[in-house]
Image (cartoon, rainbow, N blue to C red):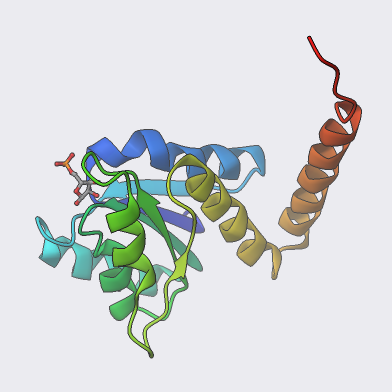
Length: 162
Ligand code: RP5
């Protein structure tokens, strides 16, 4: 069983959601990805979360666009922390996705990330940090990632006009 379950509303969400998978790969955290739609496959949504509970999955990342009800509905079925990624939509560029995910009613929590690639990558990072709270090796790798990121910024901090 992979510790991070990445769910998305459509195959078309994968180009964004794979940024979460790439981040997890870079931190050597195993993941599993699956298409589950809140509207098109509601029964699958319920059974997927029941299975995740049974399997002891510690964290779920869920991305959806437009009327993005997937993360909230997943959270309704489980006590596993759910991180929601608003996927950019064709018409409203993901503002609709963001508002659909972030405006949860009190009592059912979804941790909402930024719209698009950065949000998906950070969902992967945050999921790794959750795993790192009980797996010191993963925690160490998150620290190493931060250190490498800082060194990259420092190495290119002097700007010049072309
Ligand atoms: C949402 O509708 C999905 O998460 C996706 O972002 C959006 C469009 O889906 P497709 O019509 O591309 O399958 O449920």
